[in-house]
Amino acid sequence: MSQISSTYKLLGGADLIGTGFVNSALYGISFVLYCFSARLLYQQLEDPYQRRRSLITLIHASIVIACGFCALALDAWRYKISYVDHGDYPGGGYRYQSIAQGLPMGIASSSLLFAAMDCFTQGIQIWRLWVVWNMSRYATLMVLLPSLALLGFIGLEIAIATFDFHPELVHTDFALTLIPAANALSFFITISVAIAIIGRIAMIRRQHIKIMGDSDNSRQYTTIITMLIESFALDSIWLTVAIIFTALNHRRSPALFAGRQFITGTLSYIRLVSYLLVIYRVSANRGWEKDTERHLTSIQWNHGTQKTTETAVEEPVTMSTV
Image (cartoon, rainbow, N blue to C red):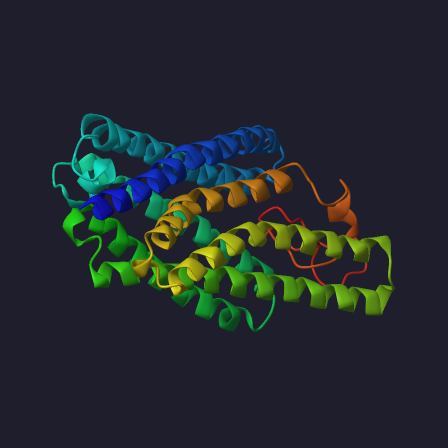
């Protein structure tokens, strides 16, 4: 019994530190990025050429940040009931919330909010991929597999969220296979989209250099690729660590299980930071000069009217929907 109690205390510590303190800090970073981005996007609403794109981006980011706030608030409510009100429960608050059936339904709905956040942040990656490849005859083929993976990911996220309404099923063999499957699909989406987008931009850069030579304009492609790699890296690293913890047979080691709980518990807010970091850098025109749109020749990221201001390989890049 003492070994069981110590195991639940270890898991409770990972729960409090991971989905408590760390998620609060990550949300704080996300909220700051959101405020900066919202101010810039609001200013861009005055530009008729950017109004529609800026409004859609602002609404999307507002929905995601609102889901993050509500999920964090519901988690705080769960901590109070589990660790404060029932801290003397045998095995501690974590064991109480794992096997007890007295948690309010509202608390369980936090998992639905986390699922919504994940689906929004993963779905925007598919949109970026479509925008990049839209002018290619291979666009449908490139988007097909990531889109199917996204549908599977959404289904798994909904299934995982429903287990919070039935805590007695959380640690069953079937439930324990859902999170690794969702992580694997998420990893596939992130990596496949990153390779496809970066590969597309690299090909256009090579065409640009072949036609116009190695100029300052062509170097902007490298800057864009660097920014995209940075945006995908954080999410990919976190997913890789989660998959590694799962592969190490966590069920035989409480420490490994606690580590996986920490990684998966913070994954949604890692995605949120990565997503808003890209929104901010694009809104602030980071990664390229102010006249990039006038000089670069590439794919049209915002599906705007096709215009050409100079001899171009393809349509002018605006990078506004990255």
